[in-house]
Image 1: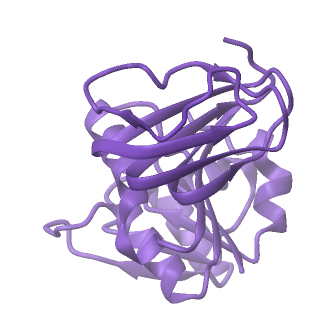
Image 2: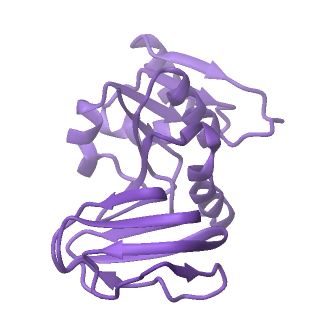
Length: 214
């Protein structure tokens, strides 16, 4: 099942992603992410969070249109996006695209990237999407789809990543180590699509820029 989640980025505009949003098997608004959907005239099937950022008129319109609204208390351990990701897993999502996860507050953006490491997401295809770029987690052997000349960065998260071997990239890695505090993995280039990366130990964040060159 393909699930799309819209998070609450202050400047996110849904219109460029309308086709993706309308093709989703399930569309989830994580709290204020519903504001961008409301502005675009798109109704999610599920709204989740403490709803402190969702405009009252958007909530009322979604409820009137039959959307399921799950309200959590403001004092909670999870962010609204984490709740939305867990809800997507519970509903059988095996492909999950997240829009509006970056931009605005740095703490929220960094936390949203870290959510890709949730153990509940392992074995599922989960991406953070923005205009012209995507980010996802590489565990084990992971394909890197994309066109020749596109920029790809491999960023270790949660500590060093070891046993890294790449295929189809300009700067090859063979059983290499990338460390969290160094920038060695930034701005590689796809030379022979489809590229791929194998990680024996640890996790890598793969960031691909559509059509961009380093």
